[in-house]
Length: 503
Image (cartoon, rainbow, N blue to C red; front, top):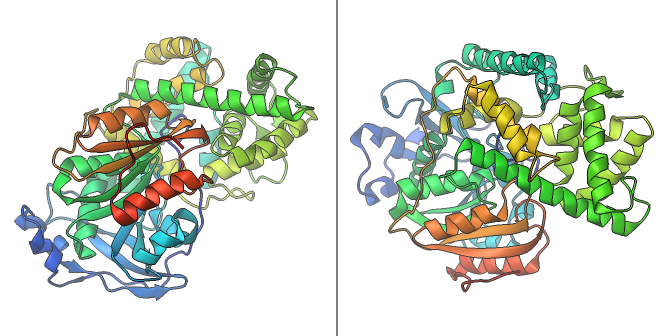
């Protein structure tokens, strides 16, 4: 997510768990013994057999995993899993994840007809799971809705010592609230933990190799899995890459530059359409957006019908603008929001912000992504607790990303104040010995800059890059028949694109 991590590839809704869902039963599974190297202490988890039940439009179940993989005899949690069965001759399962951290893989799979082609759905069961701490899988909740409103709407660009200290206090208190309310699980929601869960899911599905479609942060899960279990990699599509070897600062700067480029594309389009409320040139439009965000800090616009939120603060305004950068189809909505804002109302911009934060207009939240995202990120990568680091980064980032740099420079302060020490660190993954992995990158992707996809495709021993020359976040099933055809050919037939392939 913006200012904290990489956002969801696609916002989807799906069926929720019902009382008819059941836990997996502990019974022998052929797949567990088919893969050598399964630790004996984890055998009871690998030997689970999924007992699927009907849950509305999907089949659902539960998967049991240890809270702490270093103590598999200790506490356990259950992950919510679901599948949409193949509509034709089934060849296997395709596990999917939309990103986040905090995106619901359960909801994503439930939207199978929107996220994969009919040809893929004909051949594969589409399987989703809510990662540990997310959605239906022992969800982490730190703050109540009103407090979360205040946290998200807080000043994202502190520029005085008093504001800087307020930002430190706000983020420290958020972390302490998570520690108090989440319990022991908070220390075990890293991407490495999720990758281990995914291998147990693979075994429970009866697959000797995992077939996987991951978008945005879902690519981080996928590459982590590939690095840990390269021999178990089946058909792997990583779309909109988060490289596992970049630092927190590199991630923030890359996103700042990505959003700057995407916003420039939007402004150019707005100007070309005529009567653009931002002005008649790219420079004028970008300057007008920066001024709008600055004004939102000092004189926020009124908002009505939004629960406890009555002002469009700079925090809310920023994520409202950011929300529209994920899809070109949202650009006209953003233009209308600017028109309304310049007329004195923040309602339309707040609606965009609501979409980004999975927030309902009555002030409730439809999922816990805005709470759990820091819990995952802060375990995966450490961040500085020195305020001057963020002050200096803000100045540096502004040189190449004047609109988004100052805000994203402060994005990791939450991890700098996190109460639990990071267990992960940046690490290059080659997945030596894996089968071919398809990496997809979009040239003007705001949240996962194209260069990140190029980088991972080169680092993977068997990586193959597909370039989409376009706008928006991620590419597969986003409107390009060329991209969809290449990805489908790989998933269905194992055919990788030639070097330099661009759609």
